[in-house]
Length: 249
Ligand SMILES: Nc1ncnc2c1ncn2[C@@H]1O[C@H](COP(=O)(O)OP(=O)(O)OP(=O)(O)O)[C@@H](O)[C@H]1O
Image (cartoon, rainbow, N blue to C red; front, side, top):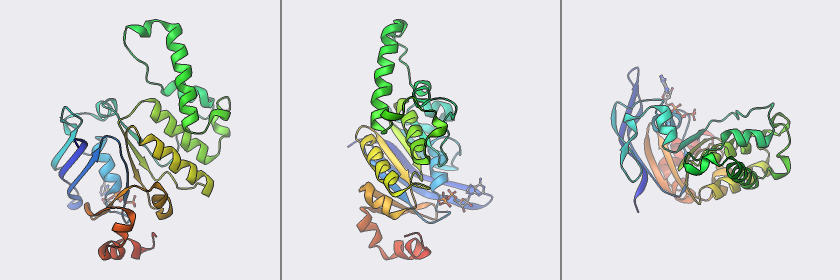
């Protein structure tokens, strides 16, 4: 299977400290992946490299069927290539309704049909309904985003990212601060989203990762320590020592 993203031999040094050390990690077109690892393992730096915020000292980051090097692209060019990132804290427009937030995020086609305003508006309305359904906010479309619960705001922001039609979605600790019900709903949303794109979730919460029921990559000291099912990686003694032993289980 051809890969959507291939990170090979990447290293980053901050003031003499190797935060990412000869890291190689690949993602397929449509897959759900959890990345776990102790504090300082390099999870955030990895996402910063993929999104162009941090430039590696060595290695390659190759994207898509045209094998484009992301290292030659700016942050906005990388976003336009179809890489979306959800930060931990939700950043929705609180004074706007859920519908308005989604409408603002919609990626509009620039083809000849885009000039036909009526059909565009109708298509956008249908797309908003479909995203709202996907993130479980159909009943809240007319509510102000500021009135939503923390979990609902997170879903809205995921919906706003989905509106951009990313091929790769990077999600940072989505379960933080959520109720048990919200976590369950969030796993459903992420699993569904990963049916048609790559979704990479950085998460500390093991129960949440178990519910995602996907391939897990364990990072440690800037490299991949183990990869496979959650049961497989948690049966690895080194993983237990470096990660579970530090109280993140
Ligand atoms: N801009 C920077 N300057 C100096 N050191 C940095 C910088 N960014 C990250 N680091 C260091 O690189 C290492 C990896 O950090 P990173 O934030 O990627 O880890 P993480 O796995 O995301 O950790 P956490 O789970 O705590 O968020 C850490 O030791 C961190 O202190």
